[in-house]
Length: 129
Image 1 (cartoon, rainbow, N blue to C red):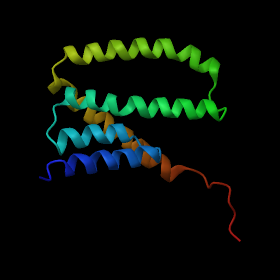
Image 2 (cartoon, helix red, strand yellow; image 1 turned 90 degrees about the horizontal axis):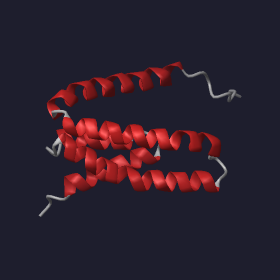
Image 3 (tube, rainbow, N blue to C red; image 1 turned 180 degrees about the horizontal axis):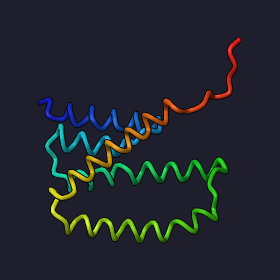
């Protein structure tokens, strides 16, 4: 009866973390593959479905608030879509076992970089009184 609870809590946690600016989609991939036993390609497809509405909402609100640089968007949209499609086709053609270790190393490197960057940030400019 509670088979839905762990996937629900996982998705909820990833959604909350992504709203705070943390890579919720990446966390969702890790949680699905390690905690829920989902195959990597299936987890990537689910992650994409999770990401698309979030990205669309972000694009809408950034545009509404005047935070969208249209020139950069025009220059990046087509090449970004083409590279994403090519990478998706390549990932589908490669054995998932070959992707797991490099992806795990990338996550460790990325997380370490973010963590070290947080410690190295200068003060936010607020002065103590």
